[in-house]
Picture (tube, rainbow, N blue to C red):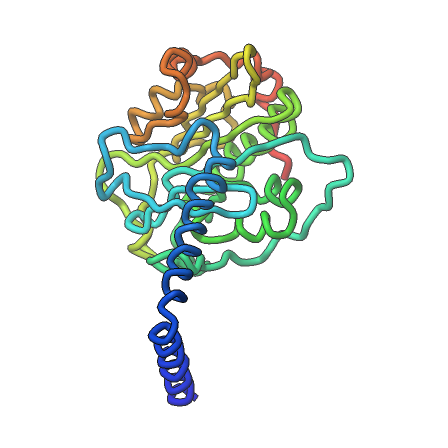
Amino acid sequence: MSKQYSFNSFKHLFTLMRLIYRHPSLLLLGLLLGAGDYGYEVKIARPAMLYQGEPRPVAGHNIDTWFRVLRNHGFILGYSDWRGNPLWVEYALTPVPEHAPSLKRPNRFSTDWRSLNRLDHDSYQKSGYDRGHMAPNYAMGHLYGKLGQADSFLMTNVTPQKAHLNQKVWERLEEAEIDTFAPLFGKIWVVTGPVFSGSVERLSSDWKVEIPDAFFKLYISAAKPPEKPRVLAFLVPQTVQGHEPLAQFVTTIDAIEAQTGLDFFADLDDTVENALEASQDGQPWHLQAVSQLPARY
């Protein structure tokens, strides 16, 4: 079978090369189509899924802040093959439609064919860490359907989280954003991801995955001028017990940028950006009303 496959592949390649030799315009057409696809991806498709620009490394790319942008159904992310983690994940939330279908949760996570490290479901097996969604299963499934939910179960959307974080505090934040924050403003943008500090520690079950020390979530309302957007930022350590009030983890975007080395919402006017990124006001988000609510599950 493999010999037959190799022979057929060579035959197809030879046929393609002969066509290009006889018709050089085909090569030009292929290049133009490729350039068109790249232009659409960079100029149209990606910006539509980002609020005020792609997150950027503050001090320029190095091995710790280098990422590749991967666009999915309902969310977009910057993936680090070196760290085996998405460095940032961004998605938009609106109120869940009244009759949105409730999809069955998949049993396993899937390898993302675009990843270089080829992580799979078993990469976390007996590691002591949960496979923590960054773009959440519930929101992706209810707002973006089966394709959104399936993409949320790609390993490029996963990062190691302790059980008390993943199943308690993180889940409570995911519930607050879809049940309270999105209905309050009609539409919000969420940027989330891991924070690494100190010495490098990797999963005992797969050395290709680095273990974060904490996680961040940034929320910004999709306001139209002259209305100003509102922001809310959280920084949650791995060491939580799970019952802590969410308000305990409120911080500023400035503080998160300092710890991640990433610049968020870089396309905003500097005056607006500076004021927003120093804000720490949970009142417009009704934070106190949801701060101590228990997890849904």
